[in-house]
Length: 73
Image (cartoon, rainbow, N blue to C red; front, side):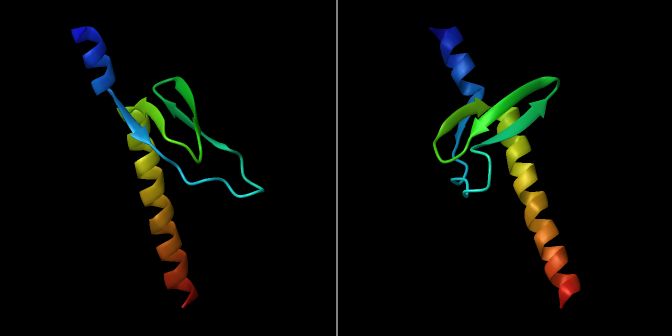
């Protein structure tokens, strides 16, 4: 049972926003040669490193939006 608890501690639950009509219903993430398709619109357990990639992508997207808004004004 200790092994299962250790495995569960390496996973976190993420919930990506539901896709719009023209978007895919998943996000493709690759970490250290392993590929993951993370479904949008529902809670999904993913490895911690996948959650970190998703979090970093969200931060980069926000920074890009801020930059574009700044140069437009």
